[in-house]
Length: 269
Image (cartoon, rainbow, N blue to C red; front, side):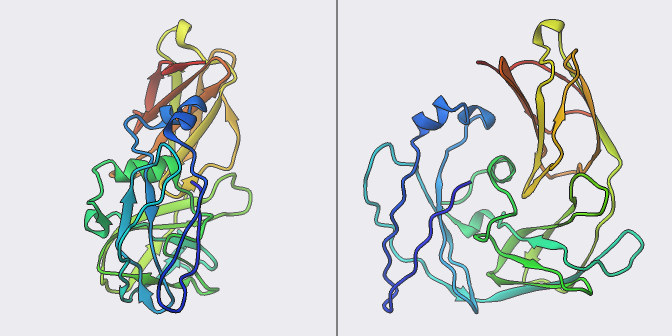
C-alpha cells in the first residue's frame, strides 16, 4: 500500500498531489486478482499530535487526472490505549511492535464495507506510519496515541531469535478502553496445501501468507508436485488469512483456507 502525505498551512488548508495507478493498470499487473471485488479506494486521514485522527474519507480511485474537494477533515479529542506485552511465560516482553488499524465502519465516511478486514489483510502492512502505532518499552509497556472513540484491531508482534517470522496476536478493542495485557505466544498451527488435480499443480510456486498488518518473512515454495505444509501459522478466529501461490504459469489464492486446502488456479498467466 502506497502513501502520500502533506502538511497543512497555518489556517488548516492543504493540497495533496499524488500519482495514483488506475484500476486498469493494477489489473494489467494482476494485482486486482488478489482480492476479488476490491474497490481500490484512496483513504484520506488527518492527524496531529495530541488529537484524535479524523474520520477516514473513502475516495474512489480516479480513472484520470482530476482534483477532488474532500471538505473538512475534523480532528477530535484524543483517546489513548495503554497496555503491556508479555511473553508466553508471563514475563514482560520489550520492544514489541503495536499497530491499531481502525475497523469500526463508523470511523469511515462513507461507512466502511464488510470486506474492510480483507482489504487490510491484502494491502496493509505494519512497516508504515500512517496507522496508529507504538512500540513497547523495555518493560513491555506501550501507549497508542491519536485514537478517537471507536473499534480498533490491536496487532502486536515481535521477532524472536531463530524464528523466521514474527509472532503476532490480535485483539479487538473498543476505545476508550481500560488498560490491556497482551500475551505473545508461538503458534503451532499448520496448513497443508496441495492441488485439487494434477492439472492444477503449481510446482515450485512461491507461497505468501498474510494477515492484517502481518507478513511472513520466510520465502517458502511448493515442491515438484505443487504441495507444501506451512507450519507455525498464526491463525485466529475472526481474523482473515490470505494465502497466495505465485507461479509464472498462474496464481491461486484463498481467504481463510481450511487446514487442508486443495487449491485450483484462479488466474492463468
